[in-house]
Length: 469
Ligand SMILES: Cc1cc2nc3c(=O)[nH]c(=O)nc-3n(C[C@H](O)[C@H](O)[C@H](O)COP(=O)(O)OP(=O)(O)OC[C@H]3O[C@@H](n4cnc5c(N)ncnc54)[C@H](O)[C@@H]3O)c2cc1C
Image (tube, rainbow, N blue to C red; front, side):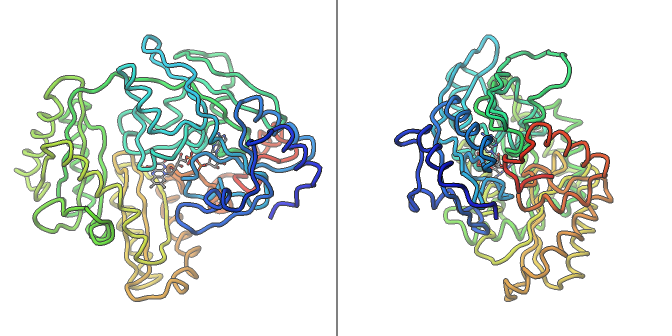
């Protein structure tokens, strides 16, 4: 728990934020202190609600002078508790929602940090362009949060992660000064790139107040299908085939286990069985193209060939937008569908794509040895090597008994990942949950260099002090 904030600092912050710019009302604070999974509840002496970059700078300036810690928060959809304060000032970007520019000639939009991803999609469409990042939390997650966690999502296979979408950043640094790096250049080779330090920094190197983001052409044909495979090894073989045969049309390639699909169908109203028969594993494939009909043709070719050789056992291609939406709903509820099934150890890992199936085999054997009867729900963006590997308590088991083994389970899973040269956090970041664990897997040389960067920019460690190294 962070040390108490002096009363003088609180008065000073209220003065710089003005009426409506802060809150201490428990009802107003409550949703911002609870994270999505309900595992963490935070505390704060003050919710700061700045309306402009200048106000963010004023807040950080006061905190820097008084050595008071700040936790930044965007949409509060982060899954590693980096946005939940433990006594720090909570600075929300909810009022930083301006669209500063959108330009189809430069293919760029400049959005403030509190703009949601769903709104960013609308802004891009308003000039007949596309912003490709896609996450199930898009209605709430924000540009500042996406940049600070370097978010991934379902279209990484084709477009890359959030880092790949960012051309420029404006941020308030830990000393309260504003850095305007809102360039919109595709090429800029002028030494160290400060924006890349801030991306993925999880609020530890400053507060992102705006970003200039790449726009892409709209795709005119899109096709979504679900196919049944016998094992994750077959899923990876199908991916290799899809890459070979579709000329780069694969936009998403997502794996789901039967258990995850069954939990989603059981616990989320309105979902439907994707295929007639029940299968051990499923992949959701999306193809897209700038040419009319090309995505559909690529999908039909791929699935027909895979059926013929026995690589897949069945498949259904969405015939309408509503069907495509229904297929995606099964995938997007892999996490929500497990919630009522009891305690789970959650892992967000990545390994080289060629090792995804081996990882699932090895990890499942290992967690089963640790706690016989655990229920594994493995799913995710396997097209880019990212598996959400969730281990639920045995059916009829006790949550508390499962929780006791959480750290040991994580260690076993993460050691397998490390042996495969993978990452213990593919897309969610480290937050307060995984920062200590990550120290085990980074070299002393790297940690020393990272700490030197942080203390140079934030010598009093006021920015999200419980997060990272
Ligand atoms: C249903 C669901 C599905 C999800 N799917 C995915 C997925 O597919 N891929 C993926 O990558 N993530 C996913 N997430 C996780 C989450 O949506 C992302 O991490 C997202 O980027 C968080 O954005 P946010 O605005 O909610 O940030 P928050 O949760 O508010 O904050 C996240 C981190 O960023 C920091 N931060 C926030 N705003 C700023 C700012 N302006 N300046 C500096 N630091 C800041 C916070 O301090 C915290 O450390 C999912 C979450 C949910 C609930």
